[in-house]
Image 1 (spheres, rainbow, N blue to C red):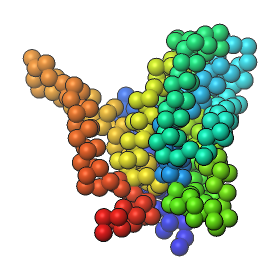
Image 2 (image 1 turned 60 degrees about the vertical axis):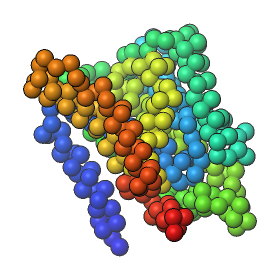
Image 3 (image 1 turned 120 degrees about the vertical axis):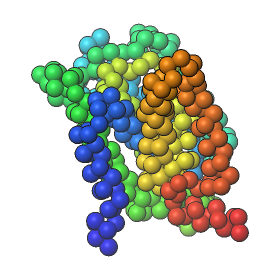
Length: 337
């Protein structure tokens, strides 16, 4: 099987996304740019939850660490000002190190216990950002993050969404390529073996603690990469309230809807849910306002009700998601049989 046959769906999808800025308005293009960044975040969580089977409820904390490391090291408010590319690397590594620090003492925990620890870590990070005012600026966001190619390109980047759009698309493509290679590697197979049966995997010579630690480190690093890119795209870290538990649950819903343990599923779930929340809901509200100016009804008032109903129906009729991993799909159907 050649490269085209193996990855034709991804290649067609990325080609369509590359052509999309030519036909959409700037507002929608900016929304899709943010969706691409959240695809990176969803892929990071997919490594931990989908591949390794570790329930992680604090992915927003690593997203925040990447954003704030990027902000602290690059904004004019602090003396570091290392620039965009070193800041992206620092944010990624910083979040990865934080993932190792969290995972190392908790590797023996499973299921709900691990979920509670990661949930608590997310709250700790949020309140630490709020209270360390001399470092993080407290409740106020850090502003003035640098552009990818210096201040000389300011007019090009500030007047159009295309620059950051294609930057996010290229980085997302590299992340997808990395994960596909890891998925078929010895490490990727070890992740899935731990997910399916940790005891049996340990008996076969797989070191469960090391495999879990690698999954946490890589997933956290990808979340940090997404956070650093997110902050730079918006030119602000957004403040600690932008990285709450709700964001972690939302990203987990991307995987539930799209399909855990599958790269295509993670990408599809992010595109569907964020497209519904950021694009479709806004368009429906505009249409309702234009067609019925006197009406006070807004679709955005009931969007969470619709989302909740869809989630319940998904769990009832297709718990594996829209594009599930073949292994997870087989496991679920064997349990039903």
